[in-house]
Image (cartoon, rainbow, N blue to C red):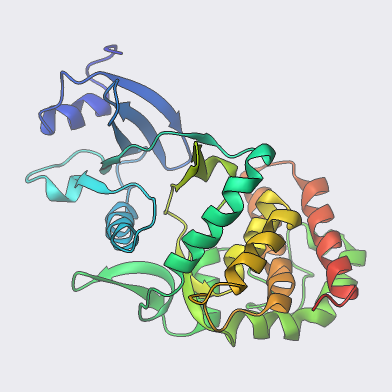
Length: 312
């Protein structure tokens, strides 16, 4: 694809001496546009910030990817970043190795479950200081917040029940759902305990189908931009939200059965934290203008039913 040689992607490729390498667009999100660099395998994934002031998370993602890859996780590995190019004044960019595979589907459960357990067992024991969103300080990664509750609030950047209080009256969706509010608000102390009184670990936070690339018997994990230091049950609760409770329960069982599983993980906390995850995701959907009211409400109701059944 050689159209519009004045586009930002060509500025990047020229700066890297790669202007003759074939490229294909991979898509665009809120913050970045992505390109495949190279027609064959191996190939590279190039992300370019969509705003001149964007791309602030790229250096953190590179450091985090290097850390995870060193521990054996199947994640993209850094190649070059705009902050590493002398004199670069264009939009921020990130160049990493490309990973083949297709987004996970329900039929991939047999390979996805053990892969997710392996990934979490690799990610969770990595010890970093602080809480919440990650930052590079003196060349190392650490959380920007000084407490678990502040970390959740700083990462969410929007209503983060119950870290910001037990009431859901001001929640953009749940404020108009008195039935769900009445069921959730009495559980706020238990949810908060599961959020802030358990071990803090690295949390990917975005383990949905499109970030799990299935390549035969391998599953690659991509998109580390949402990773933060948070509660040990968050990723498992989020897997319930994204992939369904059947997969989340199987991953939880597999993780707890491992000798290297994080000692602070409690099965009951997964359901409690799932209420916080569901409230957060519904607020995010409203902020993005996504019409997910039915699915968001259904997830919270199902989670409440699980808690009412008193799962062990």
